[in-house]
Amino acid sequence: MAASSLIIRPVRPDEHAQLGDLTVRVYADILGHHLGDYAEVLRDVAARAGACEVLVAVDGDGSGDDGDGRARPLGGITYVPGPGPWAEVATRHEAELRMLVVDPAAQGRGVGAALVRACVERAAAAGKAGVCLVTTPSMVTAHRLYDRLGFVRQPERDRRLDDGLLLECYSLALPVSS
Image 1 (cartoon, rainbow, N blue to C red):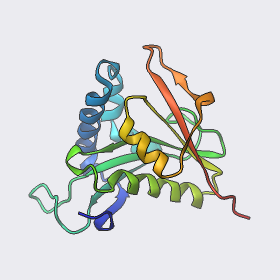
Image 2: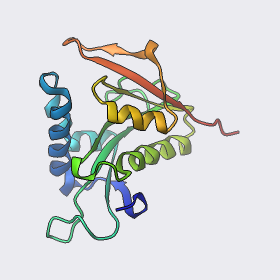
Image 3: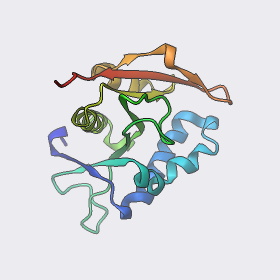
Image 4: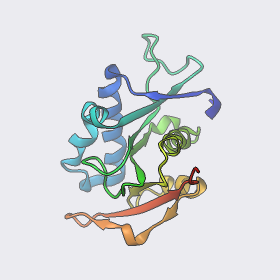
């Protein structure tokens, strides 16, 4: 599947559980014991979708359905329009990306890049000066994606959680529209 056959769209309520389970499964593999109670936050797609925009990537060519004719999410991302309860580091001039996840079976197909680009487009359309996100040192595949898309490390904005996990900040400046 090429990235061009992907459809990026808002998550549907009937996909909340599936996307939540996928997110917990992938993050558990990466974060291990650091996941803890955060698993329930990751699983609760409905709460995120009620306050932010949660996007999913699905096959646009009709493949990848669950046998009921409905495409299953290959990945998802939460677009946070600015500071608020879902933002980790966003300023009022930035949007923030949260909880990017790609099904391991769909990795290498452009799913993550398509999801990030869709959020960057939303931020630009909203007149934001930039997009930021936090990631962990162990998310090396994501780091490569962010580097490739032009994001820059912002170590002065890093945070350390109570359990010692480092959250590394990346940001992308957007062209200022006149």
